[in-house]
Image 1 (cartoon, rainbow, N blue to C red):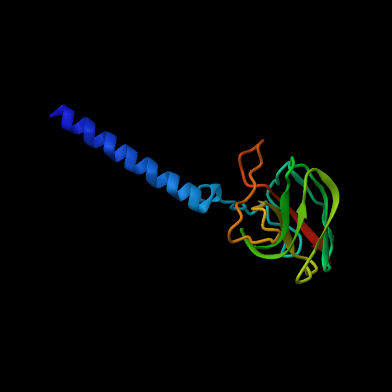
Image 2: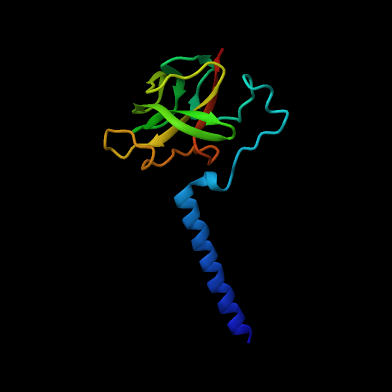
Length: 160
């Protein structure tokens, strides 16, 4: 009787592990961790504290416009795509523009399809390149910061 219990437990463990692995690969690490700001982290609608960003990207608050300047991207070759995304509440929204970076660089200028707006929050997110030469956030995987194990994202605000 103990033999049957052990085999059933083993099979159930394998099934659970396969399920969690599938969720991880399909949804990425963000499926298991989400940012929920406390009341002390949100100050006003136009000025708010954003979550700690990745060490692989550095971006400063800047004026709104049709280009975003990323202070530095510290990734090894062959590089990544640097994407500018809207921040909607606690979620990353639409991609406004992207630029290809072949390795560590400073002062990366990212042209946008739609300009940033004054007094809003935005994010820089890194994506792995599939070699196609065109940016596609639906098929590219998010670049992971090797220091933290989290997706490489840095947040900034636009001035009013």
